[in-house]
Each structure stands twice: as C-alpha cells, then as structure tokens.
Length: 545
Image (cartoon, rainbow, N blue to C red):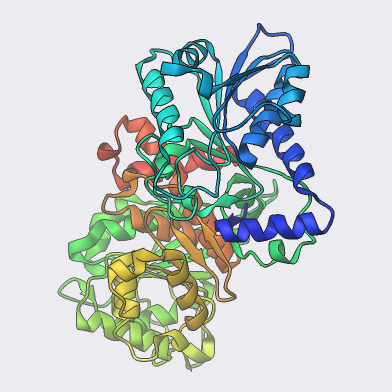
C-alpha cells in the first residue's frame, strides 16, 4: 500500500483524469469498491435479513463516493438512506440513481433539531461517514460541525451502536497532519481510496480511523505521479512475500546462523531476548557471544543456542573480545551487535576494533568459548569480511562515538534506533526527529548508505535508495524495556536466513508490532505486557502469514 500526502493524491487524480481515467469513473470505482468492503465488514450475505445503511453525505467527492456505494447496496437489497449536508438532491445524478434504486434522500436543512438524523442512526446497521474528505482543513465549519456533533452524541448514547465506516477518512480529520476536530466520529473502519493518507498514520487521527482498508479507484500503475511515490505502508501480504520458504526437506543449515554480540552484567536479559527472537523467527542456529560471566545465568534458559564466551572487564565486553569474536564469524550469516552492551569505553573499543578490521583471525588450536572456526591463516576481519550487520541499542550509541562509522559498516547494515539513539547518531534533537520521522529516516539512510529503522509509534524503515515503509501501528504494549531487543533479534534472524536488508527490517518490525498487539490482548492490558510476552506471541503472528 502506498502512503501519500494530500497534494500527491491530488496530482495522481489529475494525471489519471488527463489520461482517460476520468473523475467520474474514479468515483464509480471507488463507490462500488466501498460498497463491497462495507458488505464484507458487515458480514452481509444475500440471503440474510434486511440490513439498513445510513450515509452522511457531504458536498465533496467522498460524498459522491458514498452515494454510489449506497446505490450499490440498495441494489443488493439493503435499505439505504442518504442524509445530505450542504448538498442539493435536485439535478444531482448520483442522488437520482440512489432514488431509482429505492434509496431514500433526506436533507439536513429540513431536519431542525436533528430528530430524523437521530431516528436513522438508531435503526441503522451501518453508517457511512462521507461528510468531509481529504481536502478538509481545520477549523470545522459550524453547519458541518453541528451535524457531526449531533451524530456523535447519539452514537455515544447507544448501547449497540451501528458499524461506522469512514469514507476515505473520518470527517474532521486533516489528512496531512492527523489533527482532528473534536466532533469527529470515531470509525470502526476507514475505507480509503487508492492509497493511505499520511494523516491517518498520525495521532490523534490514528485512534479515530479503526481498521484501515485501501480500495482501487482504477489502474494507476502507468502514471508517473503514481510511480514516483516511494513511501509504502506494510501489510500482511507484503510481509508474507518476504518470509523465507521452508520446504519439507529443510535442514538447519538452510536457514543461516545468527550471531548476537550482546549483554553485560547490568543487562543480562537483553542477549536472551534477542537470541530467542532470532530463533523464533526461523534462524537455523543462534550463537550468543556474551561476556563470560553471563553464561551460567543464561544457558539454562536457552538450551537451543550455542555460545561464545568473550573477554570482559567487570562484566562488560572488553576490547580483546573483538579478536575472539572475529575468529568465530566464519559461519555467521548475520551479526547483531548492541542489545544490553552498556556504554563503557572498552566496549566502544571492541566495536571499533571489530569494524576497523584490527581483530586478528587466527586458529592456533585453542578453544575459546564453545565454538572455534577452522581458519588456518591469519587475516583481518576486513579481509575476511564481516557478515550482514544489525546494530541496536547501546551498540548504536557506541557507534556514534566512532569517527567515520558509516563507512566501516558493510553496506547495507541495518540500524534500529529509537529517537534518542537517532539523536546520538545525527546530532538532531529528539523534537526535530519526531517532527518529520519519515523525512529524517530517509535523509540519513541515503546519507549513510544503510537501512534505518526509526522505532516508535508508526516505525519508519528507510532504505539507502530513498524508499520508506511505515508500520501502521502505535501501541503502548511495546513501551516496555526489552521489546527493542525482541525487534532486533527478529530482524537479525531474518537477515541470517538471507532476507534482503530492507525486507528483513520491514518484516521484523511488522511482526513485532503485531506481536505487541496480540500480547496486549492476551494480557488484557497494555501496561501488563512484558517483552517476553511479545516474544511468545511471535509464533501466533507467523501462523497467520
């Protein structure tokens, strides 16, 4: 699904109209597809009892979409009513078509006190909110605001309110900024035309949209304005296409080895969460490279893993750990660095030494940890080549202290900062980053040459070629320590299986968000969700793909 601004959508429609896909035809397509979505959302079957739909119809194009949809529903046997606001029925061919299909037309101008509106809302099974569309800008005009306020009040008082479906966007929402008028009616679902509008994935609008569905207005693939849109929204079909195949005759070697350099005495659990996540997403083997003192505490909790015990200073990885890790990377198909490392100088030296290729790789017969490569010649890490990298958490903060770090990472690496870590990497304030997350993520992904996963509400994944994908979720269930370690492990596990860096980041972030939502449902409250609960729900998400 594409993600567009209002001006981009207008440009697409103008080019489509100029190339034969007229505005009238786009409205026909949008209205018919809207009706089909409404029937699916309402679980309507042709042989069911009579269903009633009320359309709140404004003067714009989405009011026209609503009338087309109501006429189609009437043809399917629904009882349909259109409540027109600032729109005249006479000489309106769409209103006449609805009447010809035995639909009913009512005018807000003739409904003093909104008594008809209340009666229609109380008997409706479905309400189509088509008063205002993407061209709306705050503030809300009084006449439209009074209708919305009246409808909102009636719906709030109903014990069993009808299904509310917003047409393109909930009326009263600014589709660029996501700001909303207080009279906006919360929708159970929003059926948006052609592409997701940016404001729908911004608070507070996001909390008013319900489930977002995209319908076609006609073929747009050949339009330059459509092709130029490089911003997408992740969904299940996109993520499913990224997931590795798992044939019946598979063995663990087919699914790679994820190495995870993580943990310290103060942050023991980070390594465990990341490692288990990499395994849960399907990596054939997970190897935890940790400060030696952590092994006793962790090994019994993760019997499926193999281990490399690294040199440490007071429980944090020391610079000498780079040599030991480099000697064992031959089998790694992805390397995650960062969860729970701490911020000690010796750990920064470990990262710098590893990336700069100063870690000697030499097999001298000694066994350090539980894994030793069979490399028999001495070579530098840069000559040997580091595996695909994922940097997270403390690893990012330490990376920011290393001069010229973007060029030291084999491209494309995946960086997974939250806004605070992004601030450390860029020098921007958190407020500057949050002001336009998409633009910031894109700018630095292009500049650095690496994939950026800017975490938070509506996580943005940006590729070095300028593409971005937004994860359409914002949930407090993920506002808990350790959930970032789960995300990093998911991405590393997919990368270890050979998934492209950008695709691995998108799939990992989407699955992570879905697992957070699922964990919140299981626990009954987002505040009760622990990072381990999110990890436990990953399997449920995968089963639905």
